[in-house]
Length: 207
Image 1: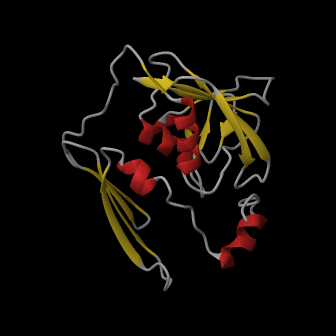
Image 2: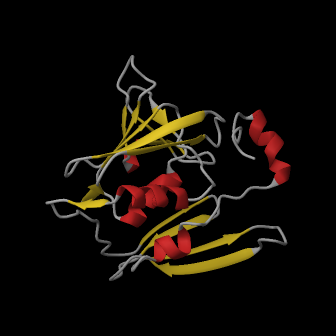
Image 3: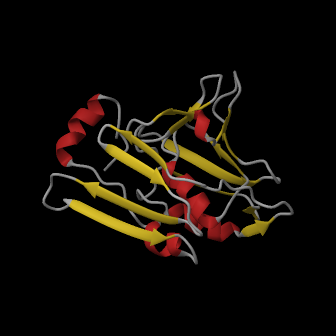
């Protein structure tokens, strides 16, 4: 398992809330996992573990929540960066409801992690081994997990737009491939959708 060597913080804007947020990473002990702490919430439990069964919303971002109703939104780029850097244990304190979007990619988070440095810990990392194909299909989308000796990601998108169309990419996520080939990937959207998004209270921090 790994955590970071020292604490560090930075400030940015929430993509959907439009609010300025300060976020601080703190080292965490073995088997602690990754946990968000909402420092702006004092009247109830403000700890939100980053676990799959804590996902409460996926409308244009991933939102985690706890039983007290405290949530943390737009966690996907940060979580990808932590996985790409091999971080298992971390406390993430933030003073708002949403992780700052930074430049729309995972790269700024990796830069901060590099600044702090990694610390190897005494316990082995636990992992899930896929033993047979797992398939999930919903609303025209399809996800498949297959057994493999290493972590290989294959994705395909299809948009009725001349600049995008159908695209496919396969990446073997070993030897720093996430950092070199994936981390700079940016969130994109369409200009004609902006008004509807903002009327729904989303993308208020986009530019």
